[in-house]
Picture (cartoon, rainbow, N blue to C red):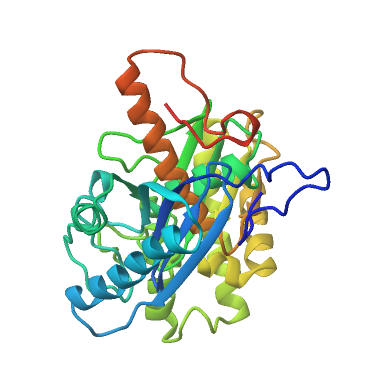
Amino acid sequence: MIADEPDPTPDDGSPPPDVTPDVVLAVDIGAEAFQVGLVTPRGVLVDRLRAPVEADVGPESHYTELAGIVTEMLERASDQHGVRVRAVGVGCGGPASRDLESVSPRGALSWRDFPLRSRVADLTGLRVFGDLDAKALALAEGWLGAARGHANFCAITVSASITGGIVLDGDLLDGESGYAGHIGHMVVSPGGRRCHCGTQGCLDAEASGVAIEVITGRSPSEPTYEIMQRTGRLVGRAAASVCNAFDLTLVVVGGSVALGFGATFFHAAQVALDDQVYLPYSRGARITPSRLGDPGPLVGAGALGWRGIRRSARRDRGPGPASAVSGPAGQPPNAR
């Protein structure tokens, strides 16, 4: 259940199930805007604020914008909603180090090796749990969205950059440096455009929002039909490789570019996927839009926060049984 407000009181007069004194402060570092919100243990988005990312300003100016809405949301949490903020969850585009200790997101943000996690921790006085935005999307979609009930799937974010997250047997994969599932650096056009990573033809260099603007000279918000089709085909091609490699049949795609391109993008992506999944275990794989829509990035950031809280509690308790990404009865994700 995703809503901007908690569920109304049931007809029998019992307390609404999603009203809780505990929330996570969710922070989404987007290519075009900062967003913050309050997310309950059942994924209800109680409140949110947004601040646009201004172009051509310095890193401290960007941080000041973020700090302003974070501080305001903390005040609203106590003064307006009467809830306790347990921790902070942050989703951010890459490049970024593990736990967002250092971030250099692409797009209008001027942050380069910016110490995001420590700055937010100092600002709030709370524990901060951060990860890449597509991994946050994977948690959110597995918890409450298009992948609910699925233990194996891939989530892809197509926005200023392209990132991904993979869930196998209920576990969100991390990898050595936290980049497991980072689909943006799969080569989809051999000998194609030079990528910032140094190779040629990476998905990020061919189909991201930044790449589209460089290739066309136009904002991704003003695409041609051909660009929407091409972007979908390239994402579908990369998705096919992931499905074949990891035995998957579901790919959930979010991000401002993919969702903005809509049906044209998703049809082209599905056709490209169908053309390359002939293995018995991946045949029939499908690409679907993020079901959570506009609140999705904040719900994903909230999921990171709740996962961090539960991981910390489990470490404090010692070894015990682990549960899957989607907790029982709508409880927050608890990836191992």
